[in-house]
Structures are given as structure tokens and as C-alpha cells.
Image (cartoon, rainbow, N blue to C red; front, side):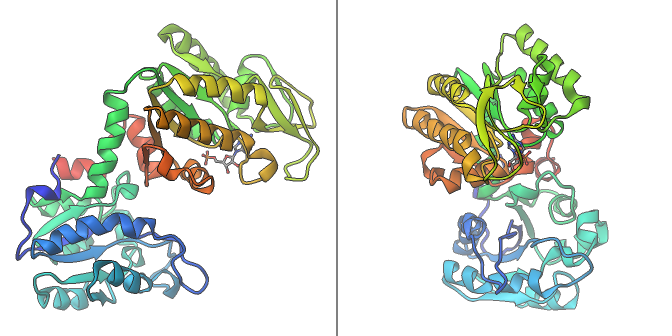
Length: 396
Ligand code: AMP
């Protein structure tokens, strides 16, 4: 892998695509520093070599041009503190201002460019825009795994302006190494656990995983499409009618390939989508018409726990129930704990996807699993077997 360890950056200007898309509160205070912290080792390596670091990122989803609340200037104090040096801020990412500032930089200096998405050319993957960014530096470094599945100007197109002078930063390299560990040489048994709301977004992943795993556990809202496919009654639970056939095919394929497909046998149901709804536990295929399943039941939890306990590699994406509501969080919490226990016994566990990461953080277990992926969408596309444009652009 072509990482920044392959180059001494002394005297070189590096433009680094980082993922500084951090959450801010209404007073523009950063509420979670994970993404900033993650980028620090890459920046430090370049500065310690005697290089110059020009940082670029997006923040939020600005609609039309600049918006104060999405300005990256709010990140300057936190960044400066972590790097132990002044961070200069360019009020735009292209044009005269960054050009002049980049030209004036000295070895060991850092500059942060304003939000890339203040220009719509960024997400459009515009070549001229990418070339203006590229003109600021001698070397391009991509360290933004979270946007690697997008062919944007700063994540992909810009790489074309650096024939050989393009590298992966440490965040990227780490993510790819960890996901490859799981996909290319997993220790067996290998168990994947999929949950979340929709099957539609995950059907390609299911197909791809059937060729790789020994056990595939299905939970969350998507379980009901599978239960329906087995002939069960799912009441008013989440259901994707048009995917019932696809679920049936997945069940058949699993059998052919010798993969154990584990679908919940019981569910916690509610008479409305509310934490204070009336609740009961029923067999998963016997949900009365006015009721909806919002979590897996105790029997399913035990069955899942048994499988997880015997696994040597575990991949988890998507909550088991509506974990945002305390009364329907037990399945998700339980599974998170079992994954942590299996990890303590030597299993390798990879957690990815926004909501499973939120769950693992909520239960304080982020340090008890092997790796928490920072890029939900990018990780899923990679697992699906798709080539990530941001990765390909560095490799080719
Ligand atoms: P996803 O974005 O597909 O990973 O879905 C995550 C969401 O799925 C979370 O917000 C959960 O509340 C939701 N979810 C999980 N289980 C259920 C369920 N049984 N019914 C409805 N939503 C669910």
C-alpha cells in the first residue's frame, strides 16, 4: 500500500484530504473530536519530516455557497491545540487567498482551507476546481476514508494531477487494512451480523457475504422481510414487500453455500412506534396485525449469543432493534456486549455503519472491540465488493 511512510516530506507542500466533518452544537462547539484526533498522526508525520500541511475537508451539507455555521474556522483552536502549533486559516479553498498563503508557507507550517462544499464543484467532481486545489501543493495525501466512496474533486479527481506523488494517510491505510483482514483472510468461524432498518440498502452486501461467512445473523427492521419470506405474519412491522422474493433467494443461497442464516425466532412487539407503547414478546412469525416488532426477543438473543461466542471473526453493521428507544434497546445492547466478550476471548471484531458505531459508543464498548470503522457508507460499499474511487485514484 502506498502510504505516507514511503516519503520524506521535507521541504514539500502536501495537500491532505481529511475528514473533518465533525458535529457542532448551536454555539459552534465541537461535540465529538474523534475525526480530528484520527487525522493528527498523518499531519504530524508530515510536519515532523519538515513538510508543510495544507488541510482540506467538507463540513455538513451547505446548500448554496458559504454558510457561517459550516465554516471550518470553528475547528482551528482544537486543531492548533492538538498539533501544538499555529494553524493558519484560508477563508476560501480556491483562488487568490489560498494561493498566496500556500506560497508563503515555511517548513513545519499548517494551513486549513475553508469548507470544500462551499463550492458545488466539489461534489460534482469538477476538474478545474480539482486542478486549483492541486496547484497549491507538490504531493496529494488522501486520509478521508469516510468519503472514499465518492468521486468528488478533493477525494478522487485531484489525484489525477499528481502522477506519482499521491499517498494514503494513516486513517485510510488503517481502515483498508482492517477491512481487508476481515474480508480476505478471516479466522473461522466468521459471523456477520446485519441489522438496521432496510434490506434494500443491504441486499448486495448480503449476497457478497454469503460467499465469505460461516454464519449470517439477521436482526433489526430487515428481519421482518425474511420472516415474511418464510411464511410468517409480521403485523405492521417494517416490511419491504418487493424484496420478499430476494429474501427468499438469499435463504436458498445460504442453504446451497452451507452458510447458517440465523433469523430471529421471537420479537418484542409494540402497539405503536413509541417507547411507552404496550409491549409483549411473541414468536417472530406470529405478530398480530396492529402490532409491530421493534426488537429481537430473548430466545433470539440467546441463539445469537451462542453463535457470536463461538466466532473467531465478527462483522457487525446495524442495530438489532429501535435502540434509540430504551424499551427496545435490549437486543442491540446485548449483542454489543456479546461481541465485546468474544473479542476479549480472542475473536477479531469489526464494527461499522453509523448506527452500530453509535450503539457501541453508547454502551461504552468502543475500546472492547477490535476496530470501529469511521466510514459507514464507504465501509459497506467496500464490503459489497465495490471499488472505492478514492482508493483507486491513489492506486492507479
Ligand atoms: P440503518 O440506517 O439501515 O442501519 O438503520 C438504522 C435504524 O434502524 C435505527 O435508527 C433503528 O431505530 C432502526 N431499526 C432497527 N430495528 C427496527 C425495527 N424493528 N423497526 C423499525 N426500525 C428499526
